[in-house]
Length: 438
Image (cartoon, rainbow, N blue to C red; front, side, top):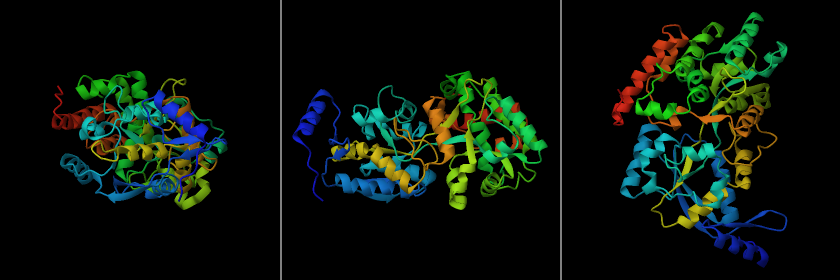
């Protein structure tokens, strides 16, 4: 394939732009406003886990090769802790691929990004990244930005059946008390107000984890204080309230909630057997695979707090792509990142794999056929009423969270006892990280 020609005027304008800025630009616009990409054959290697669905990013890679000449060779590593160790070993040995797919948030700091990854903060395309995402790929730096998002976001939210809401004359609540009133109406009408799925115990954490927006609303400094051991859930009223919400929900659960699985819960929600499901929005794709466009019977709301004017959403930032600072292909890595964050690339990704949440790219409009619930999540982004989950702000995370939450949800412990138990669970992790918790 031959490189497309660019007019002298456009080349001159691009050169002037490059002289005026430290950022390198690898594309220009033609007279119709379409991007003309620099075409230069190159090959980049990319290390990623096997759990990330490949259809979306592979569609972008195929288009990238056509438009820019960059071929991406994908190499799979192990999942979980074994995969983490493989990444660390390869970085330490100098055997890392040109591109590395890895977590955003606190775990990034474990990889010494200042030494191992390219800081893209001075690049023009980095200006498209939203500020919440930038904070998750900065590793605590005030200025550095190391990654671009490989996928879309997810949220810890309440998915609800819109037909159940319409049948009961209900509107989306904006406080927790209003939410419980809706649950009461639905229960009295003979429908399960809240679906719980402790048959897959990880799911019962979402009411607590997704309530982080409200903890931050009460104390924006909570994550930093928590990591330093200066604040605990047990002595933070908003933190105790996150566990209390689990206790509040128990009377509205489906009768078989301790045996119900994640898949069962998705079925119950789409079929109107239950009104609400607290879950990560990956459930939208699970529902879509089985029920197609019926997924649009499902709406989305953030877990409400006490302030109707501050109803927000807790967001899980996506796996990110980092450029190896020791690669001899830095220019091609930057070309890759510029293309990957373009509208053209996002359109290709979305056509191949519908996103479970908004993208972290400012100005990008979701396509018409995006899930309705994702469009509703986008409004929280547009209103700047989002925060990242706690795990993106601190590496201190307990290992027994799902079991602690299960005990509250089944009435075996109180919110206060759960908050204290989670603090103790996190203390073990803090000790392993060398943090002196009192």
